[in-house]
Image (cartoon, rainbow, N blue to C red; front, side, top):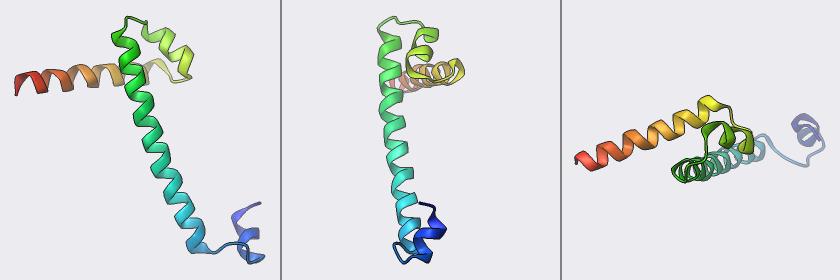
Length: 80
């Protein structure tokens, strides 16, 4: 049911829908963090970026960026 109908019928409020949206955004960020970690671990295990992209539905650029950020982070930690 659309948000407008839910509010009109009294099944929800503007504030309730805003809270729902906020929780969904947090959940999405957490899920993306878990997926990014899995992408990095899978790449570290030697799986090709194209295969990771196919298996996850991510585009290859997103996979490359996750792997590159992990390499940069590891380099900065090692330099510390």
